[in-house]
Amino acid sequence: MSDKYDVIVIGAGPGGYVAAIKAAQLGLKTACIESWTDKEGKNRLGGTCLNVGCIPSKALLEISHKYEEANHGFADQGIMAKDVKMDIGKMMERKEGIVNQLTGGIGGLFKANGVTPIWGHGKLLANRNVEVTDQDGKTKTYEAENVIIATGSKPIQIPPAPFDGEHIVDSEGALEFTEVPKRLGVIGAGVIGLELGSVWARLGAEVTVIEALDTFLPAVDQQLAKDALKQFQKQGLNIVMGARMTGAEVKRKLVNVSYEDSKGKQEAKFDKLIVAVGRRPYTDNLLSEDAGVQMDERGFIFVDDNCKTEAPGVWAVGDVVRGPMLAHKASEEGVMVAERIAGHKPQVNYDCIPNVIYTFPEIAWVGKTEEEVKAEGEEYNVGTFPFAANGRAMAANSASGMVKIIADAKTDRIVGFHVVGPQASEIVAQGVIAMEFGSSAEDLALTCFAHPTLSESVHEAALGVAGGAIHIANRRKKK
Ligand code: FAD
Ligand code: AMP
Image (cartoon, rainbow, N blue to C red):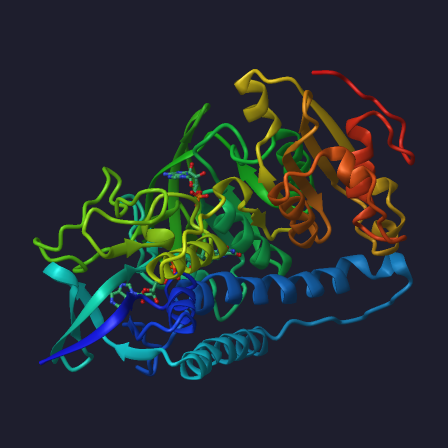
């Protein structure tokens, strides 16, 4: 038996569920297939992001930051908090509550917009037929005018450190520790390793991050990356650069990790080890041989700039295709594809996708780093402003970091916007809007910002691009 839809979406993460809602809003008969189940076997929408990614990690980051502040940041402000204790169980309950509320909310949105959820594992066959196998192993085939693949990604497991779910865990396991490990090892100083390492360090773990590269956060503007690294080290994170993990063995409840750095072979012992060395596109049992969809050499589904695959009427969005693995990038692509199916011609502006690392300080940016602009050989101007000179940041007891704006020297157009510091994740939106509208640094400099706000640092950095900052000595250099 075959049920026919205008659009079938496979995967209900931020790429898939957003695509499905948008398609339904545009009048298309839409279904969304999802295989995720929770520990009790109940179906869950929301994908990695809502269940084991962005949302639970930010819940733990917020809570652990408050705990850290209460322990170490309050006394300077005259608040004498005594015997501040952490109830890990309660923290996890709160995290789960937020996840349940949000994943349930997607179900409500599906209902309100007329999206049909189909529970089970979807497999694309030829001619846009999709076979769904439910939890009991029963199969049913659905037919669609268009199929959107949004199956996301999974943590990469490397042979020297296979996950055992107890001592050697992936990011999902690291969101579920029932107690604070005394010594925690983290392999990989990427976004996920730093965020999860920060959570447990704030709660009292002795954290060592082992990173193979010599450069800390190579995708981040290096002026900001260096600033952030100093602050992480001050917080007690032991970040070992140029160190490649070669083995991990569990013995007497301890993980013995071997790694190699410039001094040779090293060993370390941890109570828990988080392996956060990246994620791989998830396409397990997704495509029949005659589905007509091609993959690239790294296993991502091959798509063009508009997320079209090689198979007519088949699209793919989010982590399963090229580009940064970010929830908002997935959603942007989902909306674009739904609109293209409905006959519109929008495009994703890949130059204006913000990146955020939710450590403390947060690191956020959009556009090019100074290293990238320099490598292109174009002339540019830079304006920076430190939060140490921002009254609101001082009042908030978080006066570290800076805003940095890079503008093309000929046109003054902003090409890079970087923030390390308090609420960088919120402040970066100003750079995204400015760049989306093709603003010059002068446009921002001529804009009135409320006082006292953290955003005044954006204003001052924009003024500084032309050497006109008011609240700091200008050190304008023509590069
Ligand atoms: P996913 O969210 O992975 O969803 C894919 C869905 O497809 C899943 O529900 C899966 O069950 C389902 N599926 C897969 N195959 C099938 C099949 N054959 N049939 C049926 N269903 C299937 N990004 C940010 O932007 N900000 C953050 O702060 C952030 N923090 C993160 C923190 C952590 C710890 C992790 C792990 C990730 C984080 N990310 C963050 C990344 C973000 O979660 C992903 O980029 C995002 O979830 C990708 O969305 P997606 O829709 O492509 O895939
Ligand atoms: P990301 O891709 O942002 O998730 O970051 C993953 C990080 O893990 C990268 O910076 C890699 O260099 C690092 N990495 C990968 N394999 C190893 C390894 N065997 N030992 C140490 N670091 C690693």
